[in-house]
Image 1 (cartoon, rainbow, N blue to C red):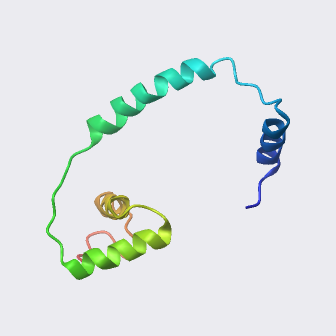
Image 2: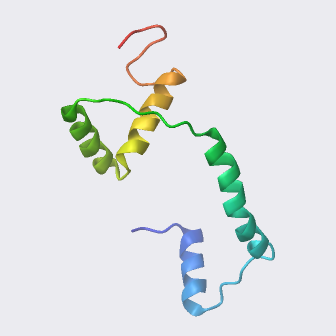
Image 3: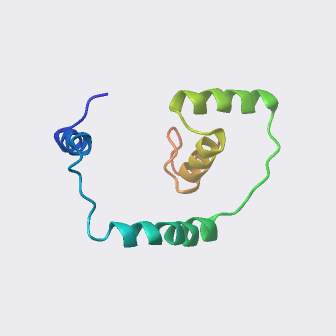
Length: 95
């Protein structure tokens, strides 16, 4: 894996034991779970769908090819469709 110059600098400092934590790192790490919980969970809505097994199998393969969970791929596709940015669909065009 190729690192850019900033990543290389961080790796070298870490390897040499000279990497220092920022002054706000501890406070930031303490707040992170709270921020994540308050943003993600409030905005999620669970939806149960009945899909053909062949479609689920194809979605599973496509998700694996992209290195993501199948549910994440499906959520992304549905989001793109909902906001009108799904590839191959023009405004008002039906599936």
